Length: 416
Image 1 (cartoon, rainbow, N blue to C red):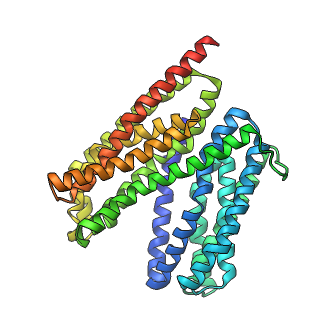
Image 2 (cartoon, helix red, strand yellow):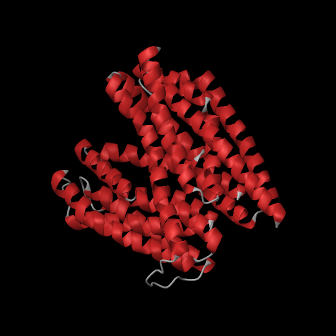
Image 3 (cartoon, rainbow, N blue to C red):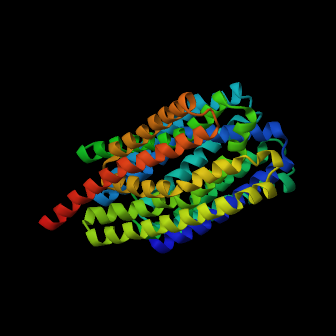
């Protein structure tokens, strides 16, 4: 798992570079209006598919606990069909007729089908803990996206949003085929049949939807910062965050925090179901060392070189973003440790507790911001302080919950 974890960081970095390359090329070859409509459509599709992403954690935990792939996968299949039909009926007409995307109707249908299929197979390999395939997909997906875009644009001479949607559709179908062909030897095929809604199945469905809301809450937390800046500060200050701070912060999350949910969560769910206390303690110590090293390096780079890096990569008017990055760097360790704690809590089956922690973080962010803004300082840094305060308090709450759950697990292990 540790090897896959470190490989995951490396391939995530490569994936970020490839995705950034796609954005640069598309910005140079496709007109701004078409590109804006495409990315808006993909964002809307992605948001509607959040329920499928939220299923991943609950599928991993449920499979570790009950080992019943038939029930889990068939329920997931039923949810996918419902989501696709809902998007087909409600979202696609909106994109076509209200947003005004000038592309044939069936391109949009193919997009939702291909994205859903790719998510389906991605969740399956996460459930079976096929880490090497997960890492391979992380690189193959942006490579396929670039290949099909360049092929459609230069070879077939397509323009507007058409080459963009073709690239998305073909790369997603390609990823699905790759996962299917590579993973089929690791598990038996699950026959398509009506799921049995017993007590375990109902618990799995409940945890899946709670996990979806919890995952969405983490996204809301970041976009709440955007809303507050849009409401109370200038366009220039919002630009510092949107153009510089948020992308850097998001890339740091993708590189060093998301792998915890991708690799550590499945391992924790297995170890917890086995009540393997020694391995859990070893994994926790490793994560703490990892958190101190990563956050320490980020802090040093932010304090010593952030001004120079921003001056090198961005116009001079974005230099104030360095102060935001420095504040975030001081508290990045809490994000990593909180991710591990949330992973442990979810791996223990306490999805509702994980959700309450996320919702608590949103309340803390808003309360802290308005306290600072109204009674202390109206500086834009008040939003950043509110963001880091929410993560610190989420870390504090999850620390005690994780500690309590681990003590209970240890006692159960000793009794057995």
